[in-house]
Length: 603
Image 1 (spheres, rainbow, N blue to C red):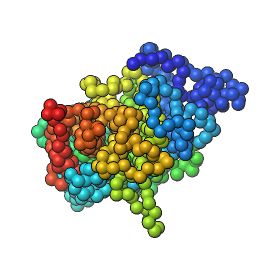
Image 2: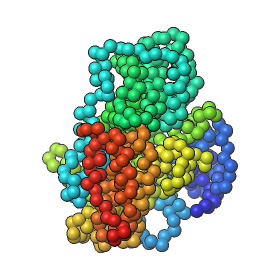
Image 3: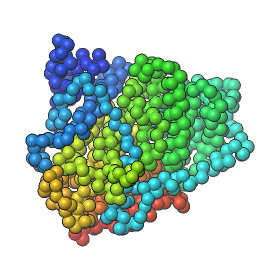
Image 4: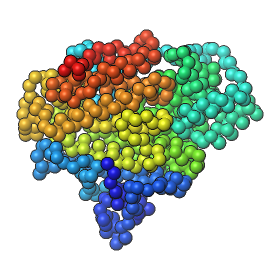
């Protein structure tokens, strides 16, 4: 539904130019205290967007302001002892659509520092947490929390990379026509996801390689990584299946060069960080999340060393465009791996709220830059969701903290009232993120075909966020049904809304179910080909199918579950392509095959 938004949800001109917090009132408190004119830029819904470099930079600044404002909102809501003390536990099902509602935390102190929302250690979002839900555990058996981590850490390096130092170094042929073909494939298929540098920067590295043939230069390593990735994404249509040697003749010398620089160069350089991130992308395309994370962590730590060497406060530091792109790529890759495998942190995640976004003025790279920023923005929102809803419920046992056996306990102390308020605010922020994407690159919601993978990824990220916002409601209802009785009543939970779900709880469960189904249909194409998201999306597909299976086997939720059998079959067909023995993909196939869904026709 279209509507006209006459006033922005972002900062007024005065607050934005002075980099102050804005409460979005008219006039806002900052302008009122300063006796300044409080002016908001009007954003009519029907408009032709300006795509000039200046307009693009302004749009990026507005996205950045949006992120800061949202952090304050969710922080204030999270720290309230009671979200709406004067309201009943349940929200009316007749309430207006969420996008028409004002923020649930509009009266925020504009001087309040933006809180940090880091993904907590031992968070309850990883896929293996769902396997420990009693209802699922009864079906598939016991799986430890670090099950997929253990699978990945046992896998050897692809091809002859395991003997990198012992094997002879064979330099690939530098036939210019072949190199240009591979580079074109890289910029067509990989660069839109990870625009670490401009095509003109790459051309300078390649020209130096062809002219000087310096096999010890980091620019050579970058070029070889680009060719390796071009080879990987050029072989999507052949019958080589899960062949991990694709592009390896370029990647082996690239890896040897960058690791030598990493160990034996004593001054950090952004070009080494870029090479390491390309290596991380190569491993991600092969479905190797731990190897990818390790390369990204090396890059992140070198970037932190680079900042430290400048001996200037972050607030006063000036960064080049390549440095900003490198930071945000490190940030997103590491946060993705923390969310999926709870890996150790490098220390770069806390800087996500303090580092400005890239502001490219290259007209040929505008669309890639906008999508690049939009994905980092939703990664920050995902971090807030993990922090607000999935922090571990811990019990003190001696000096150690022990996680509960049942992950649904994570929401016991939160209570339905606050859970409803938090999920509503997080979903409002998700919709604000979606609206902030310029019209010409914003993907339509639903399952209609999209023109490119970049748009598909943004749409998939949207549904991934929405699914975990509403997942707690579904898990609580499933847990009550599995237990067969209500938990002990308390002042915070009287009556229990999950055993006899109230309308708002059922509505949120239905949203979770529909979102899981939509996520699966949007991910099918992406899990059938190599991309930096191959492993990530395969894990999420398994999680969505588990959620749908639990709903299908819970009487109060079964009417909301669509026919899952066709999409389950399509997911299995795609994953079997990568399911080599003892791999994560193999384990996912075995788990999904055990999920038996009801036939709607029989019902």
